[in-house]
Image (spheres, one colour):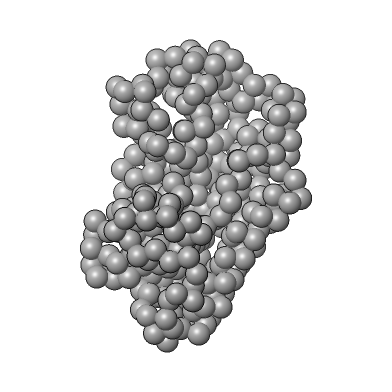
Length: 307
């Protein structure tokens, strides 16, 4: 992959910036598409930052496209305006990428595009591989539309992988950054019944999965980017409390979660999916952190002040 050019959208996000640093370390030329050029240049000083696709000449080679842009789903209560922003920032961006590369001299060889385990909608205990059926929900429709827009790149001869990612765990951002303050003060606890599945993945595995998809010519379509050992919310809560040496005795009952978070509570917090990474395992991907306790130990270490 050395000397290959990769265009990254969502480059300043939690996954995006970790991927960009790893790509640079592998000798790749990284082009970061960002609305905030100053922020991108600060976070990713060794990348070539652009704010508009027309800054890329049609003949400029882009070997790989990593499409991670999208408004965060957990930044606030959902309403009609926010839902449209979720759609525009994912599907709209992907369609703009397609329009640009339809005019390019050579399209990307591979596109790895974001998606999420929310594609499957709410489920109980059934194990879900990439061929599993979905339950209709807003999360499913959002992910399905995003994946469909990405799959249009196949018409250009680009191999496309859509990563159905779970909760990404790592230092300095992502889901843990929102959880840690309460848990550090001993105020953490299970959500609702605590029996809902929480598919998760360590940030190092998430980044390596992207590279794995770029390299493996036999991978295409949907790819579950989660640890092979999902945990239910109750297990996750206890494991995080144990890693922090804090009690986890303050549960959030379902009615309170619904009062605080509205529709998002039922879609993301009180229901879950027992997702299994069949394609990754069959393609011989070896997880660095398959166990939740191992992942949390590596992330939190002995420094309880690390966020």
